[in-house]
Length: 344
Image 1 (cartoon, one colour):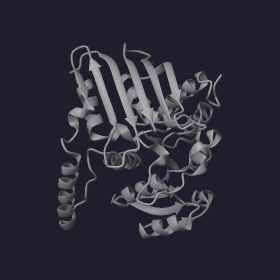
Image 2 (cartoon, helix red, strand yellow):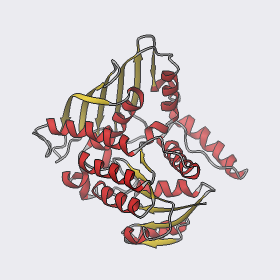
Image 3 (cartoon, one colour):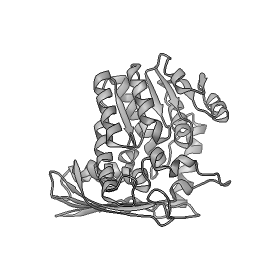
């Protein structure tokens, strides 16, 4: 059995805790958060030891921790866990800057522990199918990758609106805006398809006049392939109804493939049918499945992959180097933008 601790119990931390509780090979040994309410919820979900200070949690005999803290706490918590001999799964971005990322890479190598970064989009069913199609040579030589994701970002809320935590808009604490938040995922996907890359050009937008960018466009070039990439992200989509505004398109010199080819014809009908199936799975004592055409299944899959690697002494498919390479591209975009605190 894997003894797992959870550090940070916001939206993503709680989701990871819920997913871990469904894995029969996991003991949720501890959880840490500054909020007493969140700790009470963690106890209901099975957490056996509760802490307001994550450093106290890291004194326990743990196989791994799942870290879902604000960006400015990533380096400190990751390195302290590794130095205590604990494997780490951390939500993206791995850290705010290339300097912090390089320090984490060094600590991973020195500690001999495993670290996986939550590059969840690699685990979405349609993305895995697109990658298989590419790797099988069905597209020919890859020429162009187009990736876009427009969301409401930190402005999204449930039925009762909640204030956005102040660190989201503090450049020093968060490290960046929409490009670091959701562009991080798309730049990683480009690397997933075309390998390491460098930035050709970028443009950051400030529609809401925030201290960080709320939209961005980046043009990428593979270091080894003739493949160009265009990344478009934004926080400006204020959708009320459920929906997705994400697209992945790969153009080869023989054929192309698009994420829209895998989309349900009607997202509501699809969700209803999957919900009914889950009701019968639960009645039959089987494990329910998240919607496969969603990030929720990907979050479950990535954590399952991390646990599998721990049990079988394998290296996770997403490493600290992947986190570093992604942040390098983003930091270069910030360096070139004069409005960015990191700009020239």
